Every structure is written in structure tokens, then in C-alpha cells.
Length: 229
Ligand code: ADP
Ligand code: MG
Image (cartoon, rainbow, N blue to C red; front, side, top):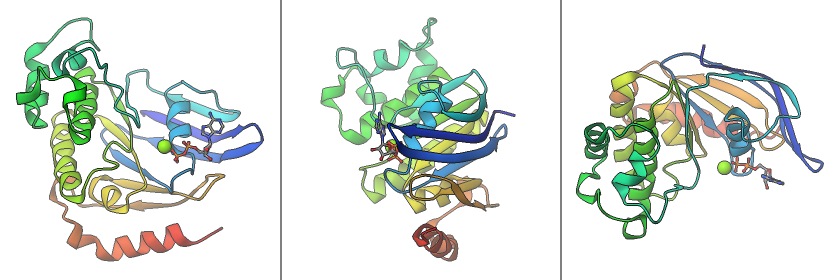
């Protein structure tokens, strides 16, 4: 097992954000956590990463975690390649370059973050997580604010990186299509205070999926998100 949450609760100064979240993550699976903006997704990842204490419940997770934050968190004074390399004591330049090549960033190794587009910086943050490695990747809306075409391309790139080692990914998003294309399981959160209101399973291998095959599932998930409970 990679992670186990039991009835995790969190409030901020009287604002109840998480209202008893429970789930288990198994090795090798991609689980998408789908919820509207403000539903507590980042709060939950921060609790899992140990950056924030839960008020109640239990949260056990593997200690080999890589976190792709909602912001890219690149160091502005380091080049792209240096931003990747600094996360490990031992520099594995060839490994880093191979990951950057896979994400279409190899020609920009010596650029500084300010010289990169938003999409490139988000790809760099993903590259850094894969370079750091780990049993569990926490990814907080890494493709937000990208146009549809780039988003679809990056989903494919992410899946092909995942296929190398099949680390567990907990991928947080408010985008239905992303969840459908990536997740073996999709956990749908309610509006805050967040509970998991439904779990969807998608059997087809992520690499084989195209959005057109999942119109019905998308509608079902839209209905699920729209229901106020
Ligand atoms: P999401 O990532 O799903 O958009 P967040 O976890 O960022 O949601 O936030 C959930 C709710 O908690 C929001 O209403 C947000 O305003 C509130 N919140 C987040 N962080 C804090 C904080 N440090 N102090 C007070 N309220 C917060
Ligand atoms: Mg968030």
C-alpha cells in the first residue's frame, strides 16, 4: 500500500474544509481527485505531504513522495536543467536530460524560468518530480491554465513517463476530461466541506484513451458534480 487516509478532517478558523476523507492508494495506480475550485484539494495534498496537520482522522503515506505544487516553484536564479538537478544530492545529468527530452524541453536546458512559457514551467515541475522519483507523486492541477491542445499533449507525455516505473500518482484536478484520460480511479469531491461523493473506475489503459470514447462517463460525472448534497 502507498497511502491510507481514514476520516481526515480539517478546518481553518471555523471554516470546515475537509469533512472526513478516506481512501487507499495502491502501487502503480493513477488516481484522480476531482473537485471544484475551493473544495479543499490542495489542503488535502498538503496534509498528505506532511506540510499541514489534520485536525482529526488518520493519514499514513509512504515516505518516498514527490510533490508537484499548484505553482511551478522553480528557482528563478537557476537554469531549467539546474532546477531539475538540484533536487538530488547526486547529479544524474543524463537521466535529467532524458526526462526533459521526453517532455519536449531539451532545447531549453539553459534557459531561466523567466524565459519559459507557463506550459513549459509546468512541464519543468513535472520533469523535476520524475527526476526526484519516489513511490508516490502528488500532482496539484499541473495543467491548469493551459489550452486544450497542449493539455492533451501533456497528458500523453505524463502517461508515457508514468509507464516507465508505474509510480503511484494522485492527480488533483477540477477538469473532467483530464481525470477521464488519466485515472484508473476518479474520486469525486463534493463542494466544501469536502467528502468523497463517488468513485468511478476506468478500465481502459490510460495510454489508449481518447476523449471521444468517454462521452457518457463525462456526462455521468458532470451530473455527479452538479448534485448538491
Ligand atoms: P482547492 O485546492 O480545492 O481549490 P484549497 O484547499 O486551496 O481548495 O482551499 C479550500 C478552502 O480553504 C477554500 O475556501 C480556501 O479559501 C480555504 N483556505 C485554504 N487555505 C487556507 C488558509 N491557510 N487559511 C484559511 N483558509 C484557507
Ligand atoms: Mg488548489
